[in-house]
Image 1 (tube, helix red, strand yellow):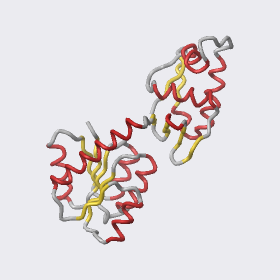
Image 2 (cartoon, one colour):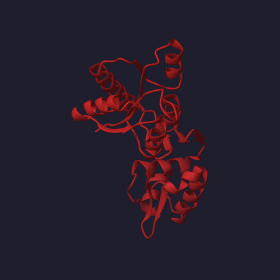
Image 3 (cartoon, one colour):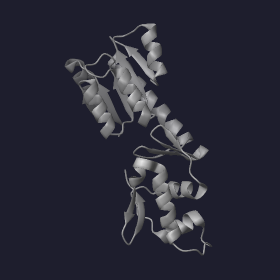
Amino acid sequence: MPRMLIVEDSTQLRELVAGYFRDTGAFDVDAAKDGTEGVDLVSKNTYDIAILDIMLPGLSGFDICKILRRKSSCPIVFLTALGTEDNILKGYALGADEYMVKPFSIKVLYAKCLALLARSAAEKEDEKILSCGEIRMYPSRMEVRVGEREVDLPPKEYFLLKVLMENRGHVLGRDRLLDLVWGADFDGSERVVDSHIKKLRKSLGDFGDAIKTVIGGGYKVMP
């Protein structure tokens, strides 16, 4: 079930929108009353779509959009009373997918959200993205990013990370990793895996600890 974030300071409107989407049975909804709470939810969770007001206590919807875009490509809808051309253009420039001005039709909002999710799913199908926390891999172009930073990995470390992320949460023994990354005819020591894991963790910086060592088992990637 898609997970939605709604950030809206009007209690009545927040409850109306959140309730409508929950009642459809098609969405799991988190709702925040201000920008600070919204950013806190963004930092702790992964969302499939977000609906943001702009004028909020604390951080604005524009601020939340910028922060969310650093970690996610999920569809973002601005739902706001700010209907000037400058604000609309700013919203799209920050990475919004849709901009709706209040007053609005909740049925139209719902339809737009379904359409955005369908488009997002199609794009992900076209370009499979492997993710684990702040680590994202784009196999179609052999690109690895940690947050906003692109990480240049040597081939063996790239394919080692790819295999681990494709099996996220599952333990892969050194012998299995050798077969998948080095090939079945490799006749070197299993310790070559340990050496490359160490280099890989260093390349990933603060997020290298996503690669866990399982004593007597091997390695796995965990969020």
